[in-house]
Length: 181
Image 1 (cartoon, rainbow, N blue to C red):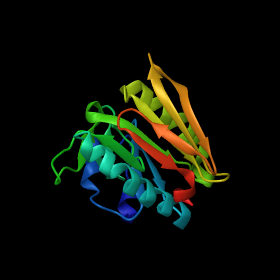
Image 2: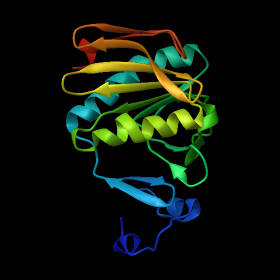
Image 3: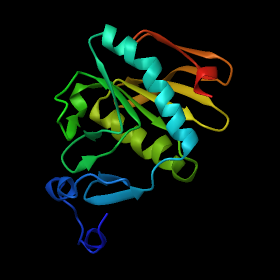
């Protein structure tokens, strides 16, 4: 990210945010402010890759697609970058996907950024109406599946290390935590 980006006056507009272009940093837009984090750690990336491998066949069978680290427009000027999303297939050249097309969003909790994934993003995804939220804890490994109930997520299923999460919606698949490492 260029030095000029850090000298920008707030608030940022969605157009200005998208004009930043591709970057190796994870840059998210939250209500006119940028949230910048370095690339995720290696374990985080391994879990994400394994989830993609597990989820992709089930998503394809359901007529859906799985995307990693994609810009998701929750509303104007609110664009997070979840670790994975399952939703309607979209134009492969798209820079941003709309939350209305997404059925499940997944965040892998980063140790130094846990509150963002557990609280802020969970709230924003619920507010946007995304039906399912999968939260992956790295230490100790655990999967928490939440279902949207009104304006809030409620726990639906949990799998701790050594167990399996049976996902019925939006795709039918078993996620074995052993496969995630």
